[in-house]
Image 1 (tube, rainbow, N blue to C red):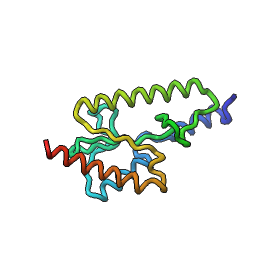
Image 2: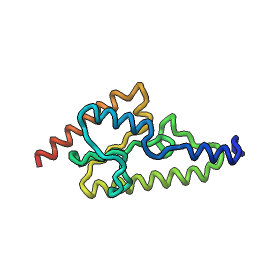
Image 3: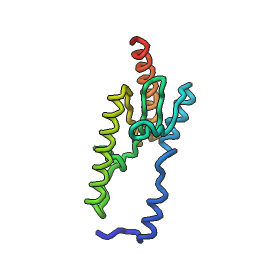
Length: 146
């Protein structure tokens, strides 16, 4: 099936997709900051340049787009009908890279959280963000027990 857009339109659309400071990232960052958490963003020294790094909690948070990271069973992840093989390979590569980064981070003593774009939609947002705070508080307690 041919693409519904011209090459120029498709190129422009793809160039407009942001890699950092996305709306879901900003939602999480503002919430955490409002609850007193301090963090760094996109720390280059860590595998995968996590979206949010909370050193005090030895925790990193990745905020994944459902489409780009292949969120299985999610209504926001629909394989494109054009260039399906190419997209499938790209998304599979993203998933494999994500898994390797999580393994490396855990080996280095980091707790890894992954939030999905769909978990930050208005109906689920408050529950998701409350759960993140609870997990961070639990992590801090565990660190102090050691």
